[in-house]
Amino acid sequence: MVKPGVMARTALGGSLLLVSQSALFGLAVLPALLFWQFTLARSRNFGVLEPYGRYVIVATSLIPAYILFAVFLMFLSAGWNRLMRWRTDPGEHVLHDYSWTVIRWGSYNASISVVRIFCGEAMRATPLWTYYLKANGAKIGKGVYVNTARLNDHNLLVLEDKSVVGGDAKLVAHLVENGMVKAQAVRVGKRAVIGINTVIGPGVEIGDGSAVGAMSFVPKGTKIPAHEVWGGVPAKPIKHYTEDEYEKKGAPGIPISY
Ligand SMILES: CC(C)(COP(=O)(O)OP(=O)(O)OC[C@H]1O[C@@H](n2cnc3c(N)ncnc32)[C@H](O)[C@@H]1OP(=O)(O)O)[C@@H](O)C(=O)NCCC(=O)NCCS
Image 1 (spheres, protein in one colour):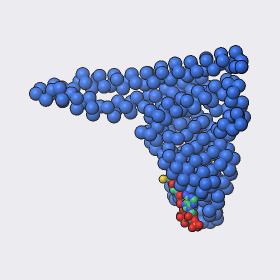
Image 2 (tube, protein in one colour):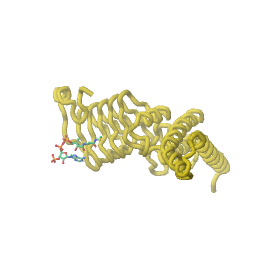
Image 3 (spheres, helix red, strand yellow):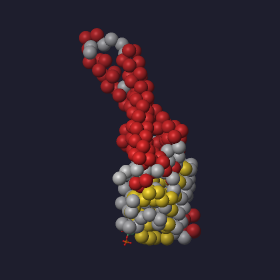
């Protein structure tokens, strides 16, 4: 039997999510439509080529209009999440209580999914993507390169200076286990590299200058010391670099001069 309080919270939380995401999406589409309309209105008459000349103008303004939409969606979404204080709270929360903590966590990650689906693949690896992640709560240092849209729980991600998150790596700071949402921050140290398609679980810490090989899985709570190379499923130590080697080569992937 579902408690009335739970039903009320779920209905309210679900409705707020649906209405807010629809409104933010609509607001983000608006500048793109205006831009499109403006381009069309200003395009000259192509005489005998009409209507095809105008079709060409409309078609070539599709990508700029999409970028406008994506930028608006990313930053409206991040602003809304801040306003509503949607985030992932660290700790363990009973999923089926649908407490406000769980609803905030669900709404936060749902809004992240909306941005990932509509903007992530096109925007990842660009500075705009990094700004969005920061605006949405991630702690990101200088010179960080994030080539993936597969990030959850942004407010629990710490990417320190000059770290690299490789293509399609997945960083997730929560797991649902035994009916509990268990959330813990993920930290990627300075100049650390996460290989392509790697999966990093909650509570993982990757030491400064370390690397995780491509296609690896780093289970929850794993602490990788500084200057080490790990890889595999689950990831295990492969190499250790001495302080000396690290200073000389900038091991394992990022030159010290970077
Ligand atoms: C893990 C990695 C850093 C190792 O590179 P390296 O230091 O040059 O090491 P080597 O290629 O000499 O391999 C050393 C050992 O690790 C193993 N290994 C290499 N990559 C591995 C991986 N992804 N998973 C598991 N084991 C791996 C090798 O098979 C080798 O094992 P062996 O000693 O038993 O033969 C590299 O293979 C890698 O995956 N880099 C990720 C690059 C990347 O995705 N960057 C993201 C930005 S584009």
